[in-house]
Length: 406
Image (cartoon, rainbow, N blue to C red; front, side, top):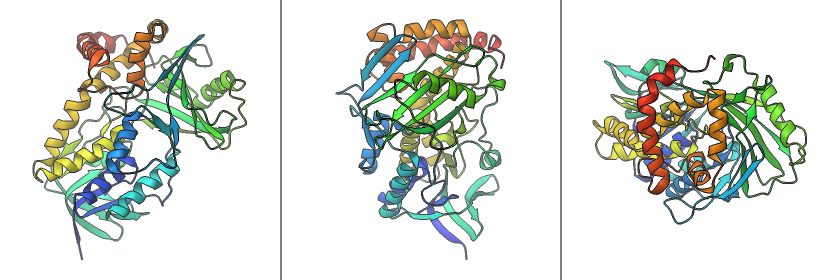
């Protein structure tokens, strides 16, 4: 017998769990289908920005198990700036570090507690009838749904089925992380090193991070953009080891507690909606190209999908897409174009000096690195990003023609 729900969610990470929580809180019949078992470990930097904290508050999920973070320490060569998260604005004045195994479990448990039907160990695919997604298929049967929410992470089989793959000409990222013991695990500052170099000494458009977990360990990792020269031959393990050599003494690091693990960061998508379906989080390409962060966007887009559904089933996908586009597209588009720009080593070196050179510019860099900028951002940060969007739009053809050789 075929089941029937209002919303079926494929994927139980932060984005999918947020959609499940919001839908259940709205009184909808919602099923969340996660292919892994409970307590899955998504490879990630584990950082929650103030924007993510605000989204967690909206969902009613407490951060009792997280380590509170008060700001960001940016390192560029010999320059070091410690910047507290802004206060008095739209977002809280703190972030957090919460290893994904625990964060994801807290969110999916909250979805179940709210009334969502959460099923683990279930592979699901959209069912398409005459061009419209009408439900999902699982090994145990079909589930019909008025809307299917794709929260399956980086593009794969489902994306290919729906035409929601990554835009081939746009940048993407690769990152790798590990955990190590450190006596500085209780610090309340994230640390980001903006001056990475590969084995040949080429500057890397990306950064290295130290995210203290408050549990005796730190999440150490590095990320790089596909626009850098020699990206195809970049060895992430070597890059991580080189970064570890830079921080091993200052952080009194122990050995890696597990084998370093790498992942791909999608930063674009060809489509994020269609008849009967929407994509959220990573599946919608909602990743900041300038820091690789996307948990907050995942949480917000999950809630936005449900809000759109509540406004009318038939028009929900288009309204969701319009809302997400109005809020984030300009910033994310600017970030992707900026990625082409800093793929050139000379421009990257100059840009890093500017990024932390003065307090005023460093504050704007903090907003960008903290995902605090969108279409509604007031003040200098918003003005700079709107100007950058217009300027880089004009320069986009040149940026693509002169991109560094991968």
